[in-house]
Image (tube, rainbow, N blue to C red; front, side, top):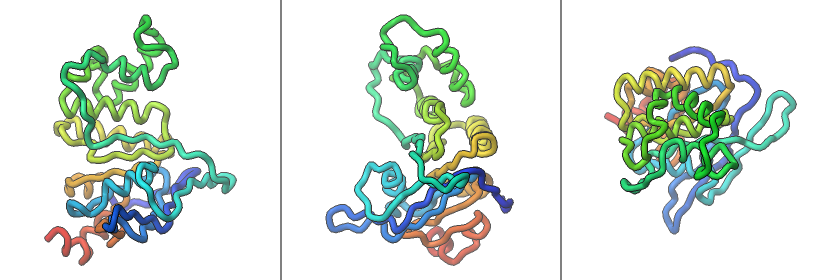
Length: 241
């Protein structure tokens, strides 16, 4: 996109991240500086360690190195609020749980088997509406398509306006119009909520159109920069040509 991104009040710094599972070195010497108001997209071949890097940032896999959140207002490290949408989740098709039940269990301390909370229902409906999913509120999650489930998970993950939003192939199963709506909302989150967003994608056309920054990964960072810089690099051509 080529435009300069002016950071707001915080950033995420990952220093010398490494992941070894058994005798296999999955990631090594990963150094990231993720600013707010940026969409950073991670690309790479299958097996490059993209999902493992996301899990390291989430604290789901053991790693070396450090990850810190810095508030640039006063240079103090504060607790990082993270929203996460996985590539997929396993749901039993016969589950009677509705989208409302799933969402309410996340945002409310009130047992979901009690009478619906009208205020909570309105908040849930409004959050779902951001992703064109408000009509799904009473639908069983076992009956959702892949794209519908992704929209619901996106609404849940952004409900509390996290500092960092991590998305693993979030648009899989979403149609062309849904993709446009998705990226419009991502742009709003960056602009109005100072959110840092990390996204893994295999769709290079979408990466080129929407990313502020691109990271080419193959166990370590091969190239980092704007989409044009990364796509024109020798490292990119070696991986994808």
